Image (cartoon, rainbow, N blue to C red; front, side, top):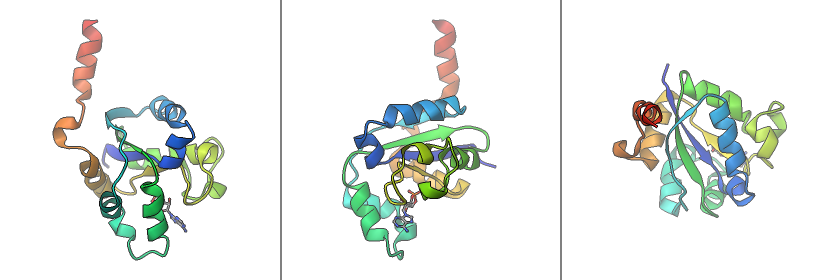
Amino acid sequence: MGNRTLAIIKPDAVGNGNSGAIIDLIIKAGFKIKAMKMVHLTRSSAEGFYAIHKERPFFGELVEFMTSGPCVPIALEKENAVEDYRKLIGATDPANADEGTIRKLFAKGIQFNAVHGSDSDENAINEIAHFFSTDELFNNDSEELIKNER
Ligand code: CMP
């Protein structure tokens, strides 16, 4: 069981001003933010990130959408991170997402679905590396140290 996952607040949710509310729900669910940035993906970066889906009929639309505006990738840490984060966000299609999940609250459809979450520990490692170098990952032990010194 891994303890990291990659979240992305997608261009629809960033554009609608929902980034803050989504980050708040993630933190309240017990996840630690290891790293976070705002980026406007290039076509090649989006194609590389979603390479696993390149044979799917929706691949072109997905890349188009993910390059339509800035998004916010976030490396998260928590015990059982992949599974717990996927529970927090709900089903890919918001029509099937449980009440109170991030997609139920903020997603408009299967494509404009507000957030991404890694689907396995192996993909989480690769996806975090897509956006962050190891020296960009915040050490939460230091966070404790800083807090205690204040
Ligand atoms: P995400 O969790 O980022 O992983 C792959 C994405 O592909 C998914 O969220 C959706 O945004 C998108 N996707 C999956 N199925 C479809 C579909 N049938 N039509 C359009 N987009 C889809």
